[in-house]
Image 1: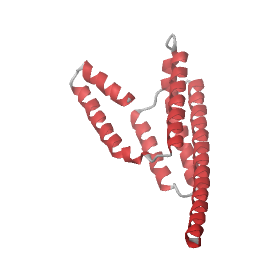
Image 2 (image 1 turned 90 degrees about the vertical axis):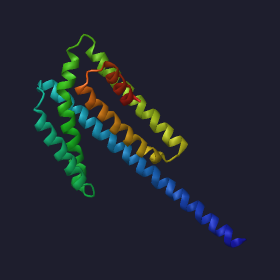
Image 3 (image 1 turned 135 degrees about the vertical axis):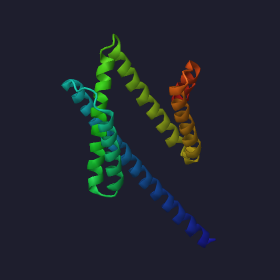
Length: 176
């Protein structure tokens, strides 16, 4: 019996260490996410303030995919952190002209703030569900990938077939 009690104590200690390390990783992940989002917001604001026009789509794709490749290749080094900030800064900078366009609308500022609030609340809500249930949601990955592929194919089909209901269904699918 003492042997089993000893194993149980060791298991409980191990699980509490795992929980503490998991919380530390989660805290660091949220801190990095907050810093990258803040940096992206600052570069988007700078882009709006400077009146940057929309860039050539090829320049955007080369920059975005090049930086994604750089982030992936430097993921396990200190340069990976810098490349992550470079990527989020670039994406924020390219978001500036879109924000400028929305700011020209009569209620543009309200639209932007509503989008920000809904995105933040959705993120907080989903994080709360994942943290309180402590359930691994990786089983949804195949379903979500298949759904994304179907939606992208439907979006491409919508370009060639001008069907308003298809556009509405694709939009609703991306919202879900």
